[in-house]
Image (cartoon, rainbow, N blue to C red; front, side):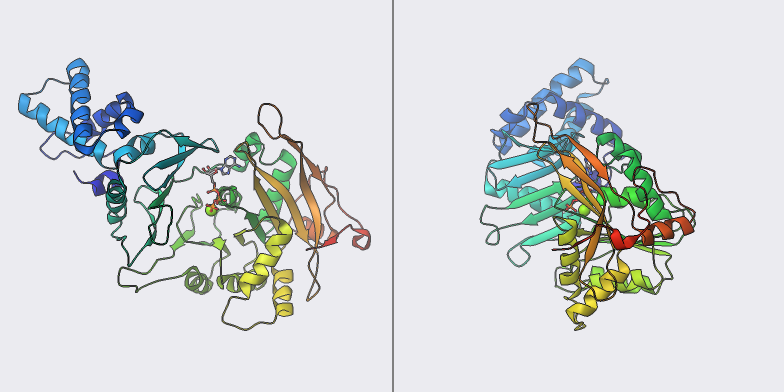
Length: 446
Ligand SMILES: Nc1ncnc2c1ncn2[C@@H]1O[C@H](COP(=O)(O)OP(=O)(O)OP(=O)(O)O)[C@@H](O)[C@H]1O
Ligand SMILES: [Mg+2]
């Protein structure tokens, strides 16, 4: 069985005349559990196969089914082929606690577990061996990596997101990053993790149901997609939702969802479909809401226009380090559209499109938290003004290496409160409502 079918279904149960695929998968898992990773990585390809065959032989003698010598030899070959498929990455892919695998050239392998990054005492035998593994991975999605295509970003059939960049673009050697398909968490679970508190949950839920436009902002791996997914889960069933993503990660449960995924150019450099193409197309699909996985370029303008023209209740994420920064980023990204819109006009677009920004942070202890929730209160071409709705106040890292913090809640500006009330939503009491926005403490975004 080839790598392709393995990647397409780890739980494969086909029977192909050489024994049961299930059996192969079971023994492969048992084998990977018994081997000594550090030792395996120090062996060459031939010795590694030899060692695996011997360990598997012991396992089969100990607890295996009764097999003829031919059947036994065939089973061993198939299991070891499978186990060697991605070399030393196999056991890491098998390990559910590993959320990200990062290979920086043959010498350095890092993984992320429970939000913490650690270096493993493993290495590839050579640059060639690493390249072979990379080629095996990208060939399963019909992509090629070579000097003409030195960067590949792809999603495996099993959902993992894979990025490859090789020399001469990478000075560190061939670099492979595998992100496991993210687990979908509900807002309730995120409250249990301390990402937000109960009151913020209730406020965000009200904002989503009342169709306010929300931008989720944060740095790399800060939990933007996870929060976007959790927020999307609050959209009432029956609304027509179109999602647009680079790598489809959102897992919406509603019955009326259309998922769109962009496409990179093929090996000949043709056929690219960008996020922007998809956002534009989605506008012609009569959506009630549009969800954009991440805005990175000119599509920002299309998305802002959609948000302010009837597709309210839309959601998107942007890569930025604070809510202030998110506004600046949106403006810069929107200006990347080929339409030459003056900067003041872009401000107008953002002021009328964006209602709330939720900023995430990833703390040194691996936790992800909401750092701030702000409402945009400026109108027209005014410079951006924002009012805090909630803010995380952290204490310095404690001896146990954890970051603790509490959320402060602030009154909801009158305009926003009115929209929530009109939609029949309640505002959690800890926030309160600002009766007179003239005295609302807002600040100019910097
Ligand atoms: N609130 C959270 N608490 C704990 N872990 C989380 C939380 N949110 C996300 N994670 C974990 O952090 C990792 C990154 O999450 P996610 O993909 O949502 O981040 P992201 O900001 O979208 O990343 P990227 O910048 O790569 O798009 C995943 O393994 C995810 O399960
Ligand atoms: Mg993301």
